[in-house]
Image (tube, rainbow, N blue to C red):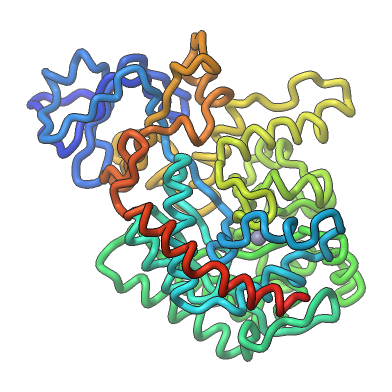
Length: 467
Ligand SMILES: [Zn+2]
């Protein structure tokens, strides 16, 4: 695939794997090799040619496995990691109060200390790596610097951001005082976060801006944050069109739908990263295509909110990736499973009603989880596919389990028959962070011990708060 004359001296050579590149041509290279130098992919070619082309100090035998780009979780709540399964356990068979985020999630975030968020981050990012996720985008939570610290320690790539609320509404529970900010303070804290992480001597973990939701952010803050995003050239992570209450709220207070409201303010542009994006009218999908905000489809939650038109958005070239929305509702952080749920969901929403048997192909949802996620975060030049020059964010997954055999086409297997637990080895920014399922960056047993020690105290406070 590459022409080089003298043997390339590289840091790591991954050899013997079927390389599913997910490049523009969807190239699959059987029995291939990937050379990594200075954190980037320096060469991809047949394993048989490595002797001629590459000299490596470290050789990683990936015999029989699939090498593919790391998964990208485009919408994640670090500070909700310890709520996995908790809400359902608390109320058992009773319905949860909607909207969850205002009634349970923000109250929970409000009682976490910086140390609690650091622990949540260590557990969450280790969990992500263990299922093949190499990059996350934090939706906006408390103590974002602690998230960044945890991301640096675990070795994951990420975009951190701060929960940003400057307005109260009567929908759901009232926002705890420590989660509210004056508009000026909210803007200043967001800008300072971005600048603080920009100054760091590393480029794996960075910060972006955040606006929680239009119903809890004032018009002035929306506009000022948009100005800051243009000046800093960073994303604003927000939630959009995620519930009927939000549409009704926008119609009542602004006389138009949520996306139309952002358009009317002149702030609907590529800096906005809009999680969920479910209840979009035809006009609003047109606005996404025209103004280029990015979207994130959180399949496990989105089909409870409406009928998301993911296939249409993807095929119209809108930058859309996949996300878990954190562990608090469905529990899994496995983006492979999110991709599979997306496929089934889109079949039900966009195929079956018209007697169309295969609305989307699994290849497309796999691309959405990788290249789509990268595009949605503005990182398409760095990650999202295995190509020379891109950052070496690579996962190696088994394809020899009885549940995966026979395997005729590694691309089919990667898209349909690989789940997070099949991932054996993960490389992020050229560094091996998990090898043969052993996490190399943090002590997992110590993490579990710390969780056992700290969890009861946190949950007692939470139960008292939402009782
Ligand atoms: Zn969310």
